Length: 171
Image 1 (cartoon, helix red, strand yellow):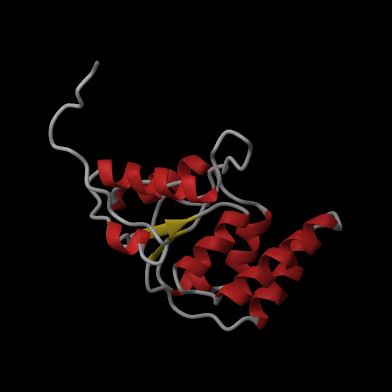
Image 2 (cartoon, rainbow, N blue to C red; image 1 turned 180 degrees about the vertical axis):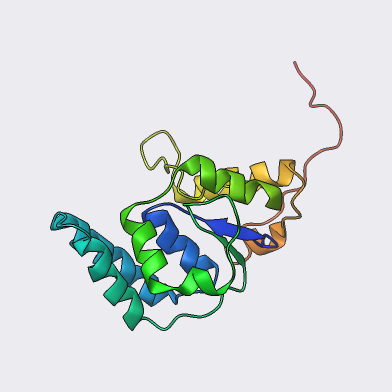
C-alpha cells in the first residue's frame, strides 16, 4: 500500500513482531517465539531460567540480518545489525523488556511513529479491524505518507460513485 517502515521496534511480544517485520525471523518462527515466551513466562522464574530457555528456543530458529532497521527496547541507541539476531540478547529483552521511552527515543529519528499494537474496537460501535486499518492509514496520510489507495481498496468490490458538483437543492 506504499507504506514501508524505516525502522521497527517493540517491547515484550511486540519485539517478536518487530523481529519478523525487520526480516530477522520468519512469520512462523516469530509465532513460535511468542508461544515459547508465553510458556516460559507462565512457568515462573528461577534465577535466569526463562532467559536460558528462550535463548535455546531462539537458537533453534533460522535468523537473518535485518532488512529494516531494528531498534531494541533496552536502549535508544541503534545496535549493530548482528546484535539484533544474537539469541541471548533477544531472549533477555523478551523476558525483561526495556522502557517504552527508550524504544520511542530510538525510533523517533526515523520519522512518523505508528503503534500497530493499538487496541482494535470490534464492538458494536462500528469499529473493527478494517476500520482500524483505515484510521491508521488516514493518520499516516495526514502526516505526509504516500498511500496507494487503489491498492488498499483493490479486490474489495467497491466502486466509485459519481457525485454532483453543485449544492443539493433544499425544499
